[in-house]
Length: 152
Image (cartoon, rainbow, N blue to C red; front, side, top):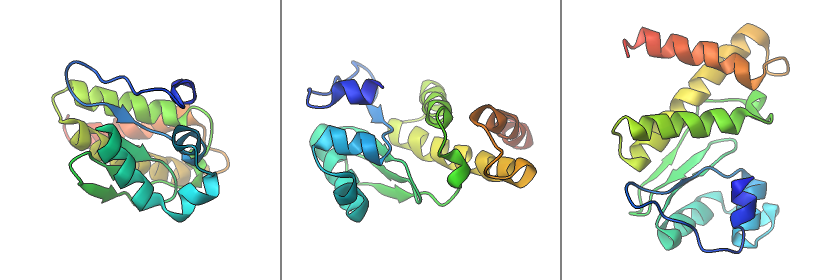
């Protein structure tokens, strides 16, 4: 809900590191004053422009989550599935990205890695439980397994 509270307000920037925002299209619409339809029709342009104008890393969630850095770098993620469209999934993503940033990754790198790993864990979770049956906390087991496989 912090993103909703920021709608129409100047964005706070941390003293160290970069600001990373992770809105879904509805939150992005409120942040920009545009409609959800406009956001969805122009996802890449919206993300790139917002990241540059607000000097932040933007993770625009949805099918093909977009990660835009303020320096113009753009990434489109292809892991994840509709089972992530449940309350709490974004909280796991935000926590994962924050943890990666705190471990020393630069903000955009943390966002890219976090989005990829979150989606990969969700894909594995959906294979176990089905997209309709999976809940956000179920993703954590798969996320832990991915880290264990990679020796981290």
